[in-house]
Image 1 (tube, each protein chain N blue to C red):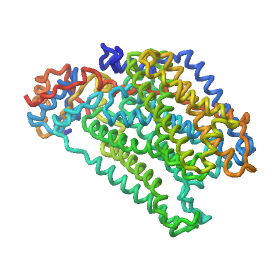
Image 2: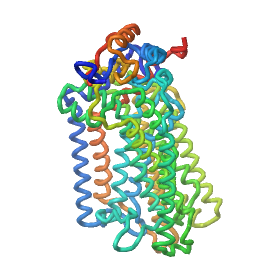
Image 3: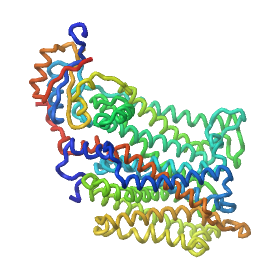
Image 4: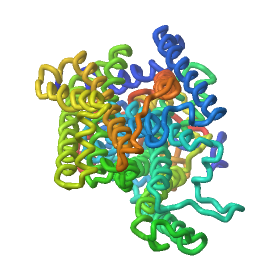
Length: 451
Length: 181
């Protein structure tokens, strides 16, 4: 069982019916309502926090000189990183012909979209005047000015908005054949009309499939360098600056590995309860969970190597400000965040070497939460501990999160979960048509037609 | 063609149980001389491509053009705004500081190519298409679940209602239906 990507005995119809029934079932499960209510309440907290911020200004957050970036940018990087696993699973594993991606790519892509939406909120509101954020877009204007394209913050605007657009396109294109299935199977008039409009008249024609497959493969090929570039650009926000602890060339690869690490942790955090609640153990098998655990182990080791290199190069640079950064991180006022990060990201995940842990669902779930926390702390440590003590001791300072820092952060988790609950209820969380292709019955004999 | 029949028909559609039968049927129909036909399946079947004698798609070329437009557009936008329209001295860097323009050029390339891939695929497929005759067949709803269909269209020069129906019946389908236009 552990080696299969789909449990035996399934046919085209059982796969179709089982996945579409979750969406087409008229009765919404009580558990869904409970989860949705809690998430929506937290999303409400986000709207209150953002409204208050728009009224009062970003002074309601704890950021202040010297710590101009704090929770906001930490959360931005954390959310974007989480999103990257979705693209990795859907694009890179597709190019590598890893069929095990099939049952997890759809909701991993949805996770990407929702994570990017949460991420985008932070820089937008950190501008202080989000209603003027359109100034970041290069458009001919009566002020006669243009954005400053030499700034990594401008690169961010293009990288994140391209990433959001391409992720949305990729996700929607993947959905079209399944929307057609929902259109054909929906019992309600409204369902047929809404899914019908979204499916755009898809009829599964061989000519269409051919172009569809070409487009999907090309999109995967485009999304792969894109995902690497996005976190690289995010890391440029730091490494292009001269702040000690930021100005380092290890950042791009180390950020990308960290993004995949935290993203896979988040996929596990979501997949484990979902497969349990919706009884999808046939489709999201132990093989999937084990493979994800292995990816986490590898990327975790790359991240650990990044921490080591960071400290080594700081010492090797013989620059006293650089040498001071790792010492301050480990023994300064924020020492506990640093050591907690090492425990969460480097020490605890080593249990993944044991097969007993990789095959233990509860252990994997707990570990995924630990890594989520660890990766959030990593960004906090990089951002806050670098900024709070830079060159001049007279301008050192401390950062303390306020209520509104926490409420905005927790609020985005609420928004993320709200969108996820809506997705689980209204769209197929597993790609139905791709599941059909991995069934034994989908294989066509090679010599057909030639005889 | 419509005037030859009492009710206008789009073609004849045969239903099959499994992908092997569909590929076999498509191949037989092509050998028989039929050209205007299409196969419908709940998932992509690579072998149908050959069996139906389909041409290569021009989509990759459209994507290439989209990518090039994005690439050049992104770069020229930055060059023109930073070096021509609004030159500002930033840290003593040259106005045309090309290395700093690479990240955005790259993102624009991907964006242009991705938009071209999606819009090009939809346009070549003629989607969105609110109406298509095959949907008149009640059992066609199963084409998105577990059934496989081969439709020989009435506009095929070789199409003849009686003759083509007999041919389709010989492929041992589960059912052959007339598709109203």
